[in-house]
Length: 210
Image (cartoon, rainbow, N blue to C red):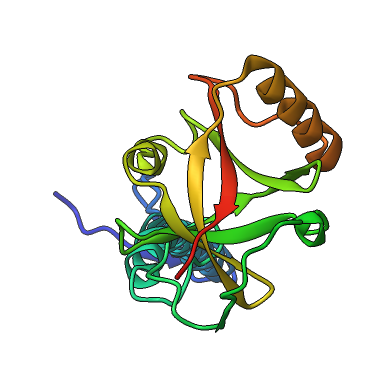
């Protein structure tokens, strides 16, 4: 087989076999740079997507964990923390004189309530009808509520209104007409009725001696 001669052609050093076979030209540097940049861009997109997923996972964990932490910590707090039940009502002046007119509580949207049979307190609505105070309780909301059952067995309780504690007794209302009147007061005062679901109980509030 005879010797083959090389011929250099092209400004980039492309080479051709004199026997008629063409070799691949050297890679275009611009094209090579574009390939590198595309790979880097793809890697950055993947890293960005993973970063977003990590942030979303962190936020979801906070949504799940934070309420649990607040609910647990509220048990040791003097009074409820928002909708989370808290510890016993300890702070505030204890009002020893019996209250015969509860109209002063009409302007309060929420108050704090603790049954003496429990070491927990909660936030609740308060109604005033003909000078008497009443506490509504939606049986099915929030789920797992049981304080109303304990109140029927032992109605001794403490209300904290504007920083003052009132020793009271809770007695469930059994009169349908009075319950209907209280339901109308709820709708008028709060703009909506208590979550019906399994029903609503109303408790009459009466001062008790300390």
